[in-house]
Amino acid sequence: MGFFLGFDGPITYPSADKQRSVVKNIPLSHLLLETDCPYLAPQKYRGQRNEPAYIPLIAEEIALLKRIAVAEVQTSDYG
Image (cartoon, rainbow, N blue to C red):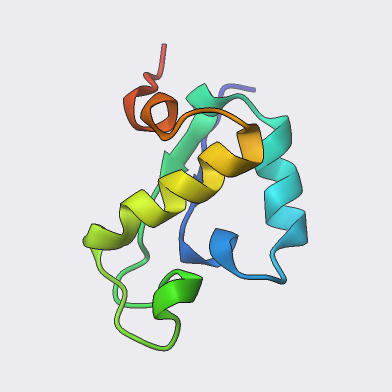
């Protein structure tokens, strides 16, 4: 359908099984990484103020789920 899905800190939460399933099954080119700042920090910082500086943690989680290098997540284009 051509839409994009955004993922943020909760993708790193232990209970995020449904979100992880979605990430595994959609093309990388249709994923957006976001922060929802100041809310929903990644697990490592849960309960603290969320910041754009935590985007790499989300990229790492997506790379693990897709079994690809983090660099692939960071350099994916929207073509």
